[in-house]
Length: 409
Ligand SMILES: *Cc1c(COP(=O)(O)O)cnc(C)c1O
Image (cartoon, rainbow, N blue to C red):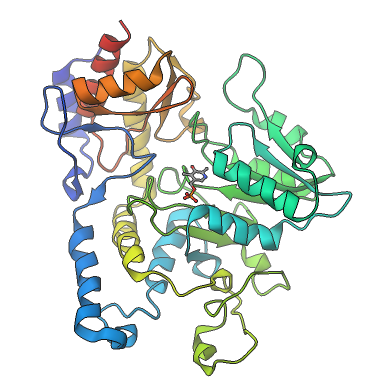
């Protein structure tokens, strides 16, 4: 086991960007701050967020309705400030990217366009360990179109005795009756990073549309959605993107589909901004992902997303990923005696290690109140640790390793 002194040396040699974040005080243990491993559930607040949000809020006090055009960051085109940084983060063109709504809402809006079942091709493929929201979303879409969810939703399971999905097994299940493949880029439970380009290609070869839920992938691993030819994707901004609880989400539609004659649910923000205020009865959607917008966006909820994306833009996801691989490997070494269900290959995982351990819920409470270590539990027996390269430290990992050794002894 690495010593505390070694952890501190590693921090000196390979520092992250903890100084940019507010780290909560610990409620137990020997250190003033928590060792925070729940950034895959709710990322920490960047220090800059508060002041920048207050600036936007004060534009309202100072300008009233005129803030739409005259605010320092005018509200009418506000969402466009987020488009470039979000696009760079996920490897997309700005025209393919829009920040809007929340994640599951975006999945629904995108399925309106991209899940178009026919009698002979109406199945949707998801992971058996899909996040429940995705499972409910696809089942309700299937039923909305008049099909039976039990029959139409194919749930992929790992082989008996295994914890993650093998790419070849996924590919094999993509038959001619599959209309849509909708998988998590990084699985929320196991932390498995899927082979997005290979599965996307295989889905297309089978004649299916391939969408990705990037809730646990955006801000965690480098993505190249455009080059991988992904049809559509959506992600939330409150996990690795540190934009606050319920933050505004992202969506991607591949250039191939922009301007195409696809069904969409529209509102006044779906129409071209240049002619929006002509107030015509019919919309004139732009040939960009902005056409999937419906309502005018909540500025005060977008402000933290803008602040956070600036951090990613400045540092770069590739650089963060390199530190993430080192930090996660270090934590993996410290947890080596436990049953880690996340793939051991760094290429098949992001910044998360999931430990299968009986009584995970009670253990997570002990970690919090006796050691100041924040890791969450998922029913029935999984503890999740996300060493986040922006603000987690080797010393945090050392604390987690030492605490786990004690609580599982
Ligand atoms: C976190 C998460 C969600 C949450 O959905 P919201 O619409 O943001 O509430 C959905 N899907 C996955 C895969 C997630 O990890």
